[in-house]
Image 1 (tube, one colour):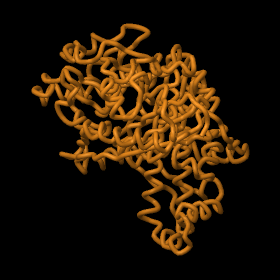
Image 2 (image 1 turned 90 degrees about the horizontal axis):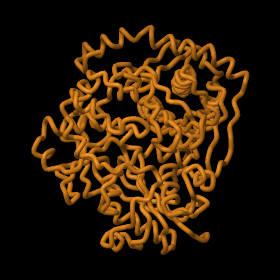
Image 3 (image 1 turned 180 degrees about the vertical axis):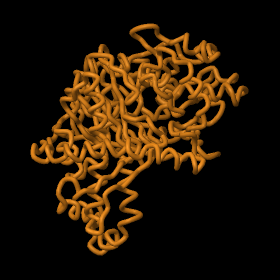
Image 4 (image 1 turned 180 degrees about the horizontal axis):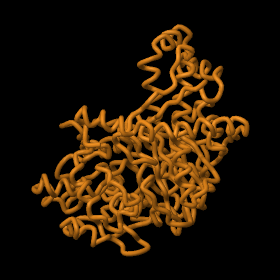
Length: 516
């Protein structure tokens, strides 16, 4: 165990809360976790009980303290899924279950927001507003459950609700206010014109008016909360952020040109820019949403690791059986098979839109495709083609960013897929960018701890804190010859989407899964 001071990062994910204790250099000292339940009352709905969040927190924080064997904590901060919307009364008690980030019940409200064509919609490139966003969900509460809405003094995101319960202070992070509710600190603040067009000016009164920067000290712990968690009331509580943004902070992405690739069942890309760039193919650029005087850009691929898992689970039964016999991971065998195949998978192309295209096409009716199959192709070809298709999709997003003047200079990766050397080398080769890894892979909890270190006065600001607490481990360099070879296949990938888009939309329409 190293010497203090110590901070705690608290990450409220979809399945549970994770807590990490870190020292001033970012070295992990201890951790704790606890799960909670997601309920699906109807198709497309997803809800959680905020009281279960709190119960999980009461278990995970003491567990992390015991694991770290430390007593004095200088600061804590929270990140969480977003937009996970909580309606709470004057005492902070939820008036109904929280509406989880993945919930899409507010589709009609999202269409209404899109139809305003308000200037604030530049943050989604003046394109379609997602039903996952916070504003459509808040409007759904107002439209469909007026009793719960009227009983709510506050309509806020998960991270802000937890921060209020920790401190008793009525604040909101600029990160959630900007990225999910169209707040603009650098211009007009809350976009009243947008809310007036939606006949929802009263909703603005249900948002906290005290907007705090990520890492800014909100207050100390309430005395009763400090006793529950085993901490001192003097512990500084920092304004938190959305989980993916905390993950980017935990990867040290705090300077212009830096890009975080957070890989899991989906890919999230978060970057910092000196200029405000906007396009329907990505979200942002959000002013001051993470680092003051910088603009934050977000993009993503809806299905990446989930496609790889689908292939393993549905098509690679023989490999799974062999892996069980040998006592190895099935992905190790698949990777060995794919490693024998040349770049381009001998003509096999895969579109990764198994759950639609989040970026750059913003097309929920796009679907996955496998093109170029012949009897000479085997499982290794298919596995490699899936990996390549995902990497082509990432590069397609990067091209959209480059077209708007943003040139990525540093790509830092975290998440489960980062363990695959084949996958990461293919990202580097396709995009001709070095891929860098950090020693601490728990990006969101470290990012929250970095924010806490600023609130506690350990570090003066987020960039300084990130430089002190994020340690880079190794870098994968691109291979110029493979990059040249991939250029041909990348163009075919991009053409394939346009070639079959109308057919896919017709199929979706025929199946009755929405209007294409």
